[in-house]
Amino acid sequence: MPYTNIDATITDAQRTAVFAAITDIETNLSFLVNLTNSERQALPKMGSATQSFVSKALEIATNNPQFVPPYADVAGMKKDYDLAVRLQGIEMQLASLHEKVSDTNLAAGSEAYVTGLTLYNSIKAAAKVNVPGAKALATELAERFAATTTTPAAPEPVPA
Image (cartoon, rainbow, N blue to C red):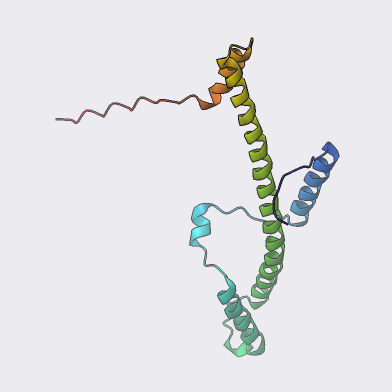
């Protein structure tokens, strides 16, 4: 559906229900981990090409146990593989939902901001023609656009 204009509200009850649903998801997926950036970078990734490799390796290990070293945990590999495949479907649904929530938030915020700018311009115009009280309101709204000037730090003296 093409975006035209947001005309919606979220009631307190709806917001509470959404938060409860998120809590239910987290409860049902209580094993989820939170990797650091360095952990995320260090881990080998199972993308779509690698997924077929892992699937084939699992099939070969299952059908040819004579080639499986005693230290390889094929049952654990199957469990991890099945979990990863199931999580992929969940991740796709959540990514789609996240994108919709993010886009709607952006659009609603943009609409509110554009209307705020319209009001600000109207108040500035009223202040220019000395409408009583307009200058104070324009000054208050102008704070958003005040340039923040930072004085550059003095360079450190070079030791002799």
